[in-house]
Length: 358
Image (cartoon, rainbow, N blue to C red):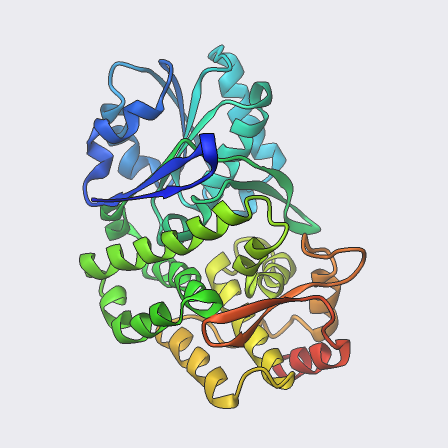
C-alpha cells in the first residue's frame, strides 16, 4: 500500500493506493467524524462493491443512493436525488458523503457535499482508472449543462481518497483505455521520464498487471497532487492539467454526453493540441507521431467525430471554463514533457488544424 498526500495546509489529505483496501476499515474510519454516512454510487458499481463498502463501514449509520450510470445523467436534476436522500434521512452538517464509483459519481457526490448545509465531509473511493489517477484528486466537482461540460460546480476537497486497485479488474476494456488517456497526459505536460516509462510499459498496463497499474496510478497522483498543492483553484499552473480538455469537452458536448467517454475525447484533444503545436513550430512531426502512436497503442481514437465540423468545434470551445475575457486559452505542448498555457493562439492556425481533421 502506498500513501501520498495533497498538501493543502490544514486541509491536507491522503491518497491511499493499493490492493484490497476496500475491505480494510482502518483506512476509511479515521476520516469519518460522525456516524452518519451516505454512500453515493451508480447502477453499475453498486452491485459490485456497495455491499463490501457497507460491511467495511459496519457500526455506522449508513444509507445509500444509487444513481443511473452515464455522463448523460451528470445533471442538476439527478443530483437532486442525493439532496433528497440526505434530507429524508435527516443527516446533519457533520455527516459524510462517500463517492463509490467513477468520475461522474465522484463529481456529483463531491458537489452535493459542497452544497449540502454549505459543506459536509466527503470521501472519494474511485473505481475506474480515470477516477483513480485524475478526477478523485484535487477537489474539482461539477455537473454538466446542455451548453457546456462541468460548467456548474465547486472546488471542494475530500478528506481522503482510497484507490483500491482490485476494482480495476471489473473495468471494461474501453474504460481502461479512457483512463490511460489521463495517465499519458501527465507525461506530456510535465514528466518526460514518466512518458518514456509509459511507452515501455503500456502493454503491461493494458494487460492489467498489478505492479504496472500501481506504479502508473502513484506517479499520476503524485504529479497531480504537486500541481494542486501549488495552485488549488486553477489560477495558473493547474490549468496545465487541461491538456486536450478544451477540444475534448467540445466533442463530449457536441456528440451528446456519454457518446464518447471523457478519456477518449481528451485523447483526441491531445492529438489536436499536438498538431496545433506543430503548426506553431513547437513540436516536430516526429514528436507528434510519437504522441499519436502511444495513444493508438492505448486503443484510443485519433480521429474526431465525422459530423463535428471545424465551425462546430469553435462554437463549442467558446463555451469553456478557460475562456477569459472572451479569449480562448488552450493548453499546448511546447515539447515532450512540457506544456504551456497559450492565450494568443493564431485563430487561422487553429481553424486549419481543425479543418485538417474534419
